[in-house]
Image 1 (cartoon, rainbow, N blue to C red):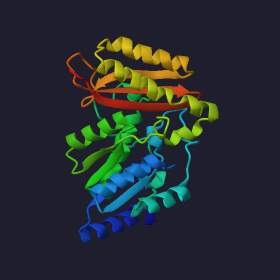
Image 2 (cartoon, rainbow, N blue to C red; image 1 turned 45 degrees about the horizontal axis):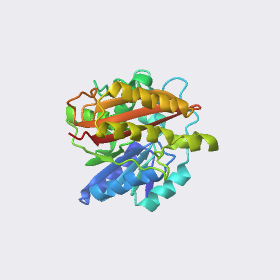
Image 3 (spheres, one colour; image 1 turned 90 degrees about the vertical axis):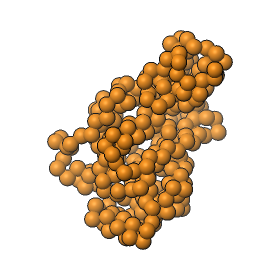
Image 4 (cartoon, rainbow, N blue to C red; image 1 turned 180 degrees about the vertical axis):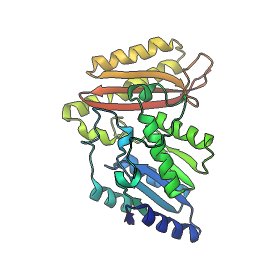
Length: 284
């Protein structure tokens, strides 16, 4: 696996791969990689024969008082993991490489509707930063396919809508959530949890599971269901940010006629913000 940090070096490697007839996949990350990221690489390998990963902690998607400065940077370990997983090229740009004219006047990509509410409501401007950096990475790498994790469900919806509406020639593939044995969705931020918090953290997934079970057993009082889930999180020692039921495809609020739903939750455990979701079909 080669590691490059400049656009010129990236394009040299990409052009050579394309000239040899290879199909190119991109897996954008912020580093501090875990088994969930490795599943993205494996999915990419199923869709292409030349896999490019990027590691870039994107300042544009962090808000004030978020963990930009403390976000773990583990490049050497990440390189080893990516090489072992079969990644061919790693792109590690600097902030100056990604935003050579600074971020203050940076052209932004804004994706209407699906970026609003949920994490978009809790983190104003977050998805503008995500959509902008993904657009730049798509233009830099020009992949045939890009793989994103379904744990960040709203982010995946934003990228799918952006790609479709801006006619980007990139196939977007979602990869299933990878979980620990106790159900906790793998996340780079799980490392912030102390031992006691780590024991508590799976409560978020359990609350979502219980909500889904109630709906599939016939409950349709959606407002009461999400309120019950939020109360359960509080009882477990977590501080709910949101628990919401949405239509799985559009992320519009769930209605009695919706057949494909997703329940999404975010909650704080100490200072660590955890997110999770379950997409499911409503039984008639």
